[in-house]
Length: 214
Image (cartoon, rainbow, N blue to C red; front, side):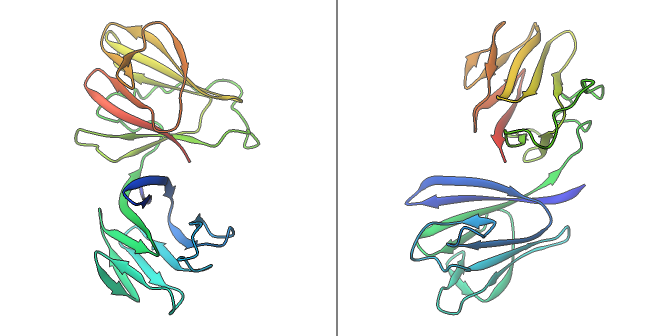
């Protein structure tokens, strides 16, 4: 497993964007060439760099005229931890780390090991971004399940089982077995096939997961 970092950007207590990054260096700034772009004159074109490693994550100031503030303290460089708040200009970035898990790894024992891979997977030239699920509760809270194959099956046989299909026009969820509880944003899935949208919350029996597009 490798560490991934999630940065949720707030402006005046409103979420502007949320991004997930793998190991490496994440450049943050106003310029569009950055990995994380914040469109504000209070943000330097190259403002900060986030270094993500398995053992530690570090934030580094890149421009002396544009401060980086972590939990209310100005820093040049420091190690950051889960739920730390990084203030850049007028924006706040809430930092979280999570472990990237393989397609067959369990989310609260819901993901079956026999994940269905169709004969022809969608190629990397797919017009849609890669989607992922993040566990919202239970012992695996925060863990990420990338939806890289053409179809992923989630659930327990005999109870609630869904299939999430990756198509050229988006991700679609449908019920394979509906003997338990399956809801999307608190609405029952029933026998429908629904297109998933960014930040949709999926509940399968007692486990909640959030769908998002990278």
